[in-house]
Length: 261
Picture 1: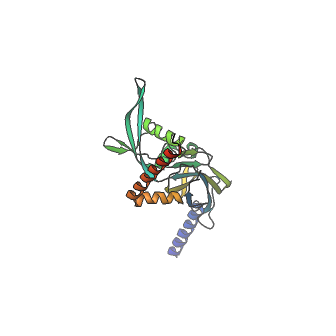
Picture 2: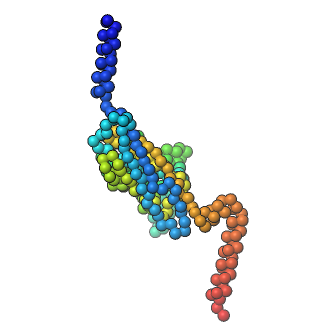
Picture 3: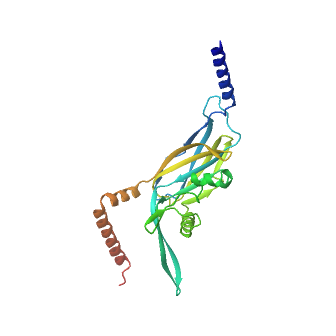
């Protein structure tokens, strides 16, 4: 009898605890309008659209009142050398140099509002949210490490990449169509590097990340551009000889056309 009452009490307590627990975690479903972008001779840029929906993980789970979205798109990694110029005796001369190692060649941070309003500084740094918090490793002497966001070389590098259109932060790049359905516009400029791109979608509620999803896209050369790139890569010597012969033929033809008698 005592054992039966004890079991009943445990079951009742477990049921009460279950009703007081928060609803199951959300799940995120995303879809990209185009996973493969073809770059041809007349490519002048393209805008992809990412659609997403937030759904309860459990059939009877409840969704929260409001969400925030941060979409980070990172292009293929590359190494870039930057130099600082100084004016000496009226001439601009290269001075100190810094090399950025395996940094994204394209980087876009899209959100529904400024990331500073979405979550605190610690989480932004830990989750690499925003251009100031993305790791950009530099070669400083014999060491390779990231620097503080106010480092002059880092600031100059991000500024130049932003001016070229390959780095961008848009606090209005994500739009909610309903409280749980959203879209994000991913702009790809004409100078978009080719390669594989990683798309990281994070959902926040009350300043904390509640769910995350990843996707990918590929930017590839197509047509004659792809033929030339493949020939230069696979048949370097032959490609060089053909290019030299074409240059000589062009020069000869120009001398004939514009020859003065």
